[in-house]
Length: 450
Image (cartoon, rainbow, N blue to C red; front, side, top):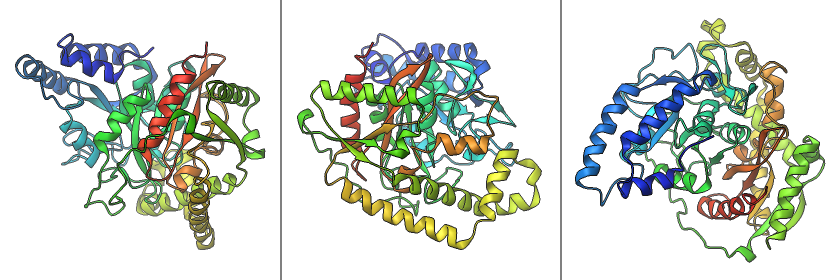
């Protein structure tokens, strides 16, 4: 369904076998072909065509030292500031907002030469995981348009899955990169908390928000991660002196923990079978996999929801008071739940956050990664369960790693009735490069399944 791999396109550009305008033309054709899926809120086609033409000229003259994403069509989630281009956060409150400056990550992507084709549709204010946006239309799953694409970065996942873009940025507070990536059959990477600056991103939850890439393969995620990572002194939530060194791990030395227990067993039987089949493939390839009961993740998942809703209600307090009717029903309900939560509930959730981080610090003394299903179900129908209840299901296996700030990546892991499912791989805090290296190895093994 998708077109080029990012890294392959980069190579062909440097060999002068293609041009930025050729790549962009294909991207624009895909945007038109798949328009019904609702991937974009705003596109910037005229401007980006001009930029691609200028890049064509550069390619003709000097191409020995091109920036990494030179000529690569990229999409950005619509809660990420883009200078002189509308940024709505999928909300009526920002429907006419045009930032005067780029977000930190936008500036990084532009400096790397990316062709920013537009801003992707999303669950309103990023507070949900279906991307059924009441203001800008729903995001539909490219594998079955009667199903949700997942969220909140639904449009970004659709754009990559269909080849509208060769990579995209999303945000992730409870699973909002990994869930749509899993349901749309692509790769989604949530880096360690504080590793990527969130300056210039309309916030949902200050202590849980992450920015990261959605791509067609792990190598492309690594490329984009390396571009946008780094300490930002202007962002109070950015972490200084992050460990950028990649510790090389031999395949036969990788220690993998397979998540088991009642918490995991609540996933659909077909999802669990696909998960078990994937684990068998890893073991048959020579990887060491041990089972670990992770029932304690349930409390972390619940605490993540509490912090998200309370901090979101705090950020949107005035808007909720003055224009409650401007919110979609499900978002308003979750904001009101946050506003009505007690200080005791919030304090308990923050306590559980600290305990969870400590427990994982001990856990990862014995293992290099934890693996589990990304989402416990296949993509739900667009018309179906209440969005608030659906959020509790879809974020169950992803939210604990927002709470603890651990890096986590989802990679395709087969399909059920034609609908993709994902395998989630979780690593040590600030060991993002090591996680991506292991994920690359696992991706190669799973790619061999029929």
